[in-house]
Length: 634
Ligand SMILES: NC(=O)C1=CN([C@@H]2O[C@H](COP(=O)(O)OP(=O)(O)OC[C@H]3O[C@@H](n4cnc5c(N)ncnc54)[C@H](OP(=O)(O)O)[C@@H]3O)[C@@H](O)[C@H]2O)C=CC1
Ligand SMILES: CC(C)CCC[C@@H](C)[C@H]1CC=C2C3=C(CC[C@@]21C)[C@@]1(C)CC[C@H](O)C[C@@H]1CC3
Image: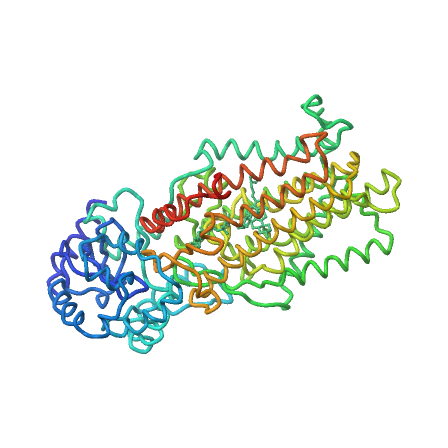
């Protein structure tokens, strides 16, 4: 290591004289996605990428090209002369440009954070941007059709692409200036390192060989551990399957109350049913077939750390429609779907086995992935933790995206199938001609939730799971076991525990569901539309906060109300799913309780991640939008 470190220093002493800016020098660095310059200190220069690592006064570290740096003296002289120009004088006092000139010593992020701007102001900014003779060089966006094919070659490809971008600066200059937000994520920026040695100047100077060695060792940056860290991972690996087992056995009892806790454990051979396992496999294969059917849109995911954007076949709505037709045909030809009710435990066991085997495969597969393909949150180096949390971000076999498929298809559509089977089982068991009102509500509400998710499948690409979480046991189990076999608890409960509803109660529950759904859908769509095209004229009324990454944060509209309006809508919907089951038992309220815990934890995970990504701009957002999920309460 020390030899490598020496190699890095050599790079500085020998190479630096030919470089424009020296290590330790204070210069002006362009703020990504804008025309603003702030004082930065040069920490290092990477020969291979030809990028300077700089640190802003607030500690934000970025990699900038030489064109994005200016010497302090030259900058001040030009700045003064420009400030006399009429165009500059027109700039508004709240504009970032003006703030810069007034106080260049203010920290970059603080200034950016203070600059809550109208989205519409971006067009006004365009005029000012043309005054500044600087361009950022956007990385060409790759949209690989076949991402998982040559896992390592792909990264070499990427390096070539990055090195070529210098030639394209002028070509794309006008577009870049006109759309400072749209190009977000495509600059070659490196996130602020949180690995402890970020303060060491020398550590920033890396010899290319050192980089290669790191690559080979698979050493990339990782975020702090969550879910209780390494010990927590052992706990969750045991607890989650045990909890599903408990729920499935408990709901099957005549009296699923706390008085009958714990439910008796059946003999081991009851768990295993080869036929149930083969049905699960068939279902997954059927869904996989629908997923690869070239029907529907190919949507682009968010830019990855490498700058690439993966493509996803978002034909979820098509998949659920075809599945519904297939199920209706099966029922028509005499298939007894109440098998799902009577073999619930065996089906859950089969799904668990598949999710476990899949998780092992995912972990082994991830060992062959390039460091850039690993999830920051699942790259601790601890096998058990990484197995649980998910080592690789987007494991793919050719075009087949395993995480996206598992999250959106077999479990989610399976949830609706199981609910439908429960309605049939209720009719059979209670001797009814039609399902009860409560069962109909639960079925329709959850069907609406799933269909909406599939209709807006593209919006999933901007969620935490798709963007940040690796694909490992947690999500594989969550998608294939947790969702279909625990989210169906209310329907399962109603099969043997009728809960009649009065018309006013029914009406109130329907209204609650619709209000929740409205908040959920509108807020998710707003964020998704903004992340996809921040300069969308339809969103021009929204106020935003710029951040060091070039991305902005919405600070008005739904995302100005609370920090997670989508969670609020989701929780209201969850309440509407439990209410039809009445208050006789805690079991149908399980989802509501679990969901509060899940979303509160998710919110805190997201807070940590966004704080890490956006620094002071995130703090500013939190100061402006004070409540997390429920306005004035939490
Ligand atoms: N039924 C279920 O079991 C579950 C349902 N859900 C639902 O799925 C949906 C997605 O949830 P989840 O992925 O947790 O969270 P979000 O969809 O809310 O995604 C969080 C991300 O949004 C971006 N963001 C946060 N604040 C802002 C802002 N002010 N302006 C712009 N972007 C912002 C950040 O990413 P960046 O800035 O990098 O774009 C952040 O990391 C939710 O509706 C949730 O209720 C979630 C979990 C389980
Ligand atoms: C087993 C763990 C304790 C928790 C596993 C969590 C997963 C079940 C959920 C994580 C995020 C999810 C999302 C959805 C389903 C549940 C999981 C997979 C949706 C697909 C549900 C439909 C919505 O429209 C979008 C959701 C995105 C997040």
